[in-house]
Image (cartoon, rainbow, N blue to C red; front, side, top):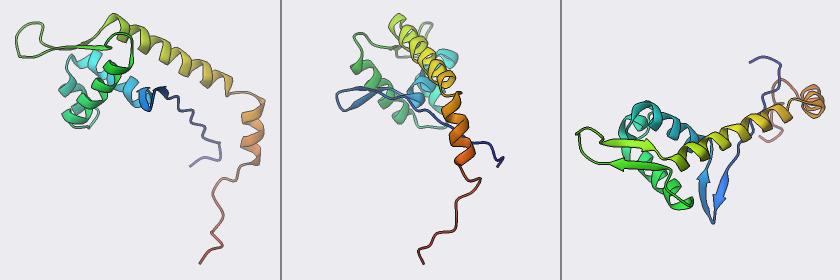
Length: 126
C-alpha cells in the first residue's frame, strides 16, 4: 500500500430505518440499466438474485415512485429498467457523491494525511 491516505466517503440516505439509497444500491441501479434485468445485474455484481431483488424492493418502497420497473417473462419488453424517478435519483446521488469527493480534497485531508501512520502500530494487548 502507498503512504497516501485513503479516504472513503459513504453516503446513505434513509427512509425510516431502511437505507433508501447507498453506494451498493446505486451500483445495482447502474448494473440494471446496463444489463436490463435484476438477475443479470446481480450476477454482474456477484450477488444472488434474491439479494438484488430485496435491494430493488427496498428502493421501490422508499421513494415517491418506484426506481425500477420490472416485467416478468422472456418476451420483448421483459426484464427490468430504471424508471424516470430511478434515473433522477441515481443522477442526483452520483452528483452528491462527486460533490463530497471534491469537497474532501482540501486542507483538512492534507493535514490528516500528514498525521496518519502508513501502518497501524502493533497492538499492546497480548
